[in-house]
Length: 294
Image (cartoon, rainbow, N blue to C red; front, side, top):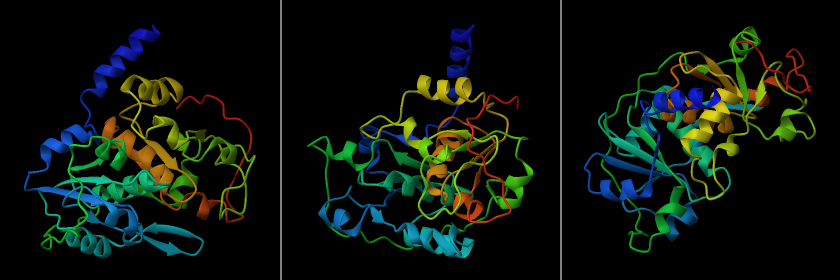
């Protein structure tokens, strides 16, 4: 029975967009006129070497500080950054980092911001720059890329980003996944910038990094299906709500579910625990989660 379930889930997964693109596939796409590469690494790493014609973007162009937490910037701000990168409505955007700390999460958050604002063709380079430079025959540039201003017009998509009130109202009603390491979920350690410890009641621990191999490439489809379907009993057509410390970690779980596995109603609590756990009127628990019948 278990094998039958997994095989059926694999068949479903074949219908989903990949979300992640291989270095080999990107190599074949480099001459496409509508291709826009976005490098989220440091300026030093970008100057040392990047994929030819890649534009560099800072995460600060997509997120703004709000008290003790951060939220996605306004549609106007994001439209300006998208246009600065030379992106048009029909652009194929591929985002990557340089395999440094948090760059995978910067990639997924920037992808989230683009998709929330109406971009359709957005992918992440599987394995990031490390996979690209692993082949000595692939070109690497040290020249600053300059692009013509893009014409993309942002249109905000409601129903993906949710706030504290929505999250509180849906405790126990929809499955919630927390993307932080388990030591923070269980309250063994305290997350940076978070006053109170523990997790949102009935949320399940789902560390974002568990979905990747040690080289930074995404795990095989069968393993992802085991994690999300068999492990958390998620339904592809049902709502799932994702959160973390401050929005970045949850954005990767969101990207995998919505853009790679084809979940139709994945939501993200952008303020996450930097908002939730720095208040005194929100519930937190430290016990081990059980299996809930969503």
